[in-house]
Amino acid sequence: MSVAEIGIIGGSGLYDMPGLEDVEETVIETPFGDPSDHYVTGTLEGRRVAFLARHGRGHSITPTELNFRANIYGFKRLGVRYIFSASAVGSLRKKHAPMDFVLPDQFIDRTRQRVSTFFGNGIVAHIGFADPLCSSLADLVQRAAQELEFPIKRGGTYVCMEGPAFSTRAESHLYRSWGAELIGMTNLQEAKLSREAEICYVTIAMVTDYDCWHEEEEDVTVEMLIGYLQSNAENAKRLIRRAVRDLPEDQTCSCHSALHNAIITSAGAIPEKTRRDLDPIIGKYLD
Image (cartoon, rainbow, N blue to C red; front, side, top):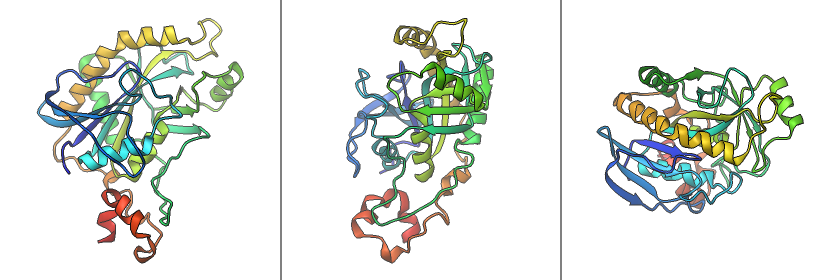
């Protein structure tokens, strides 16, 4: 199945993608269960795109409940090679103010209840994840933001917490002491699974608040978060649309060969069901 080349994951406040033409809804069944929603496929700026609302339309799925494996597997089944992910984050630094866009380049995993790999059930693989986000896609988004004159910063560490509660004040100060710059609840698993699926992935982080460390600012609330998201959603959509337009059609990346030399299990030892389930991801290495 090759329906779309580019995937867009819309986070809190970004539940659709204006400008899509020839729109269809596509239902994907996966060995890992149901994705968050139907994939909305269509043409955007002349490119075939698949959009997925991360938390479902109506925002009914918590970060812990998200079926990250099904979401990324569905994109792989559709033929996606690049994913632009937009999400709300808290800022752990004064330099990242609400309404700013940030392109982080590192993660710290503070989640405890999530599956972050496609592997297991008779197959072992260890991907390289030292640089967890695609620098080529980040370059593209940064240029697009600069052309649109949107405030954007490059680099920094994103702490991925379990949620759904926001941080305690002690946690917020701890993360700052580690040198982290942003905090969110969703992007690490998406990045890791995208790398295993050999899909380029970039996080477009939309700052909504200062978490709870900043003594001169209000502690984060849902009302505050929604207010900034609504204000910035249109900018996020314009930014993604420009990035889709500017993505070279012949772009290649090391992300697309992340599994090369990563699978340790011999082909003959992999159970048949596991081979079938993971065929869109590992098939080319077993033929």
